[in-house]
Length: 243
Image (tube, rainbow, N blue to C red; front, top):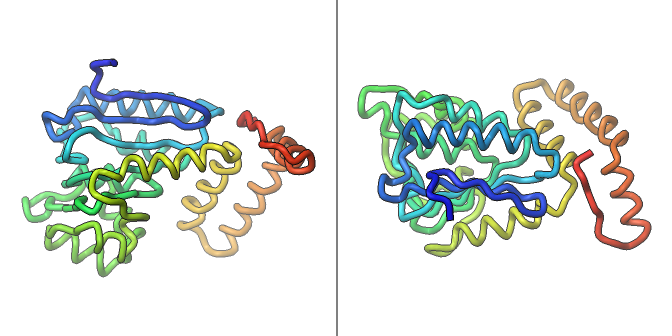
């Protein structure tokens, strides 16, 4: 096993990114930030990857970050594939912002989120003021950000901050099951679906529908679309290549 603090594994359309720095609460220091940026760039350029699974080791998901670290958030946000986070413990400050970068969040019942930046006299700097309202609504986001209170897994699921809840210790297996299922689907189709939803959320309805139509037409020109049709007619599992 590698001793590097960020581990990247790829199998059958799935890329797994794991922060393995449990002794520090998986805090994102300069070294981890650099490796996250490198992993994000590598994954983004891999046509065979359909989905990304983000996880950490230890009891804490992520207890924060070094303010002087490279912009790992921008790097992860630029990944075109859907990202699933397995949140098994506390996600605090930048750790909560790390979880927000995921498109789907599977949380253990023991997981908690906290944005204590404002209580410390500072502002979030990795997207929380923009991504949190998009996930839970403006009023709830302001409540969570201004109060700095803990948000448990049950509340997170109720307000849209968590996609699913798993038993204690079960966040990673549950998230991996979802990731493996998605990894069996067409890489281009999953990328285009994410692009349509993410980019479309900042557009008017008419613009978003136009984007969806453009991506639909683009997908029809790919080898993966032909493979999808052929596999259906031949009643076999598709062999997508991301092209």
